Amino acid sequence: MQHGRITTRFLAFVLASAMLVVAGCGSKQAAPVGGNSNEAAGGGQPKKGGTITVGRPTDAISLDPQLATTAPEVWVYNNIFEPLVNLDEKMQVQPGLAEKWEWVGDTTLRFHLKTGVKFQDGTPFNAEAVKFTIERVINPKKPARGRSWLGPVTGAKVIDENTVDIITATPFAPLLNNLTMVFVAGIVSPTAVQKYGDDFGRNPVGTGPFKFQEWKTNDSITLARNDDYWGSKPNLDKVIFKVIPEEGARMIAFDRGDIDFLLQPAPSEMNRLKSDKQTNVVSTPGLRILYIGLNMQQAPTNDKLVRQALSHAIDMKAINEFVVEGQMLPAKGIVAPAIFGYKDVGLEAKYNFDVSKAAELLKQAGYTKGSDGIWQKGGKPLELSFWFSQGRDLKDKEIAEAVQDQLTKLGIKVKPYFREWAAHLTALAKEDPTFNLYTMGWVTMTGDSDFGIYSQFHSANAPPAGTQYNRYKNAEVDRLLDEARTSLDQAKRKAAYETAQELIVDDVVWLPVYQTQEIAVLKNYVKGYVGHPAEYYVRFNGVWLNK
Image (cartoon, rainbow, N blue to C red; front, side, top):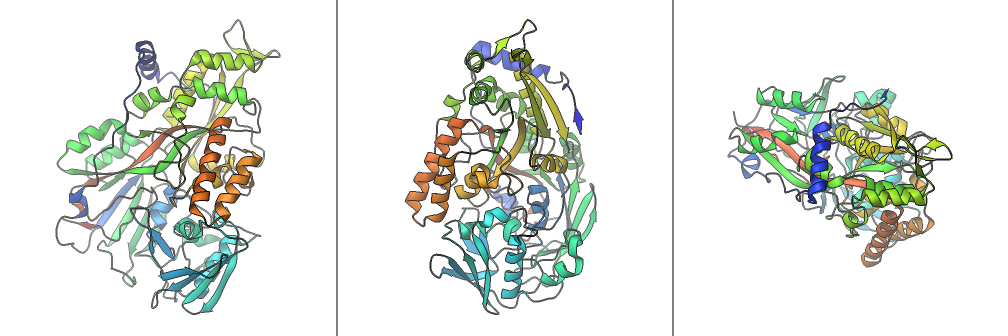
């Protein structure tokens, strides 16, 4: 952990931002980068063999879906484990390990499983394995990190070897979509879990097209082709996920051919990469929102007037223009427009950059400017504790630095704390943390607002139960989100989500920065890769090398 005043390395950004404000102009709407490259997806008859090396910014914490649910892990184990159902590139539910399914009443979802499937350790996949996985996730003594995303699921019942019911205590409308998430319900080998115990995350076994081979901490994870895979056999022999934290170093590694497939490329390099004939850029409008979160239980951000002031004190347009360099889409809300239940609540107008308005709101909150230019109340300066990490989301650390600089110029003291990604998550999950602001991104993987809004704003999901790090409590929002997840009427669900978004934005719980573009940069000999709106879906079972 590091803390202290951030350096002035963003002077160029600050000067540019100031010029932008003086000139009275805003940033341009970010345009999509590249497109789904037909050349990357096609390219002729697939060839067998070869190793692909993937450059990514951070290492995994664990390869056990019960313990680790963020992209650095899921990018890897999405190729090891499989769920009962999948979400395709058009956000439609498709068969996975289940061939078909149906509701048996309002609280039972029945799945008919594929036959002849085996885990990578040679043991059979069947209804008992599904039951084992579900009960492992919801185990009250040791619940999975994604337990809350299964809502009122109470267990699973084996009907026969290839038929299993997943049972809920109350109707749970988003259940099918939630089961598409491999990091919630990726089916694990019961034999391997029992064999390895707490070390399963270092010895993962699923049914997927690739199997785990080796993990060198903070260096690389290697997967090998599963020759016994039940579906179309992978073309590649191996996939190596290489950790390269600095984006400049990732770019150098890609340019000299040390890696074939680049995640989170440097924005400043995108124009060059798109024009390079040896490179393909695969880009898809994403579902992830990067945001600055506010702790609703910690003074002074427990004061709505202070939160409102902050919403006008940060120039998101300048940050997207000069820090993110126009490579992402300015956020329009707390979920992306493609998500079921999204509503355009006029976020840009409500949280517009206006330092005069911010100052007036601070005055209303009882603050006055001291002789040193710092806002204060009762003789104490207005100081915010700001927690952030580096490398998990595009420009996350740089955005935090820019936010600190802007708030400092307004007369707010900011005490920054930088942690590595795993430590950042651990700190946020403490039951009584002392931060005011934090950086985080959230991707609504299921395409349904329940995952994006219930999980992040319902009071029941505050730590240690879930990932609602804001510690937000609003009884009406809770009621609306409960209604939306228990009703099987899609029109009622949509209306409830729309009203909830209005209330959440009014309460200033998040300060959304950008919506992702899901970008992968490939050498032109990498074929068969198809981008997905949900960032975790980096899969290699259809990829091959034309060299």
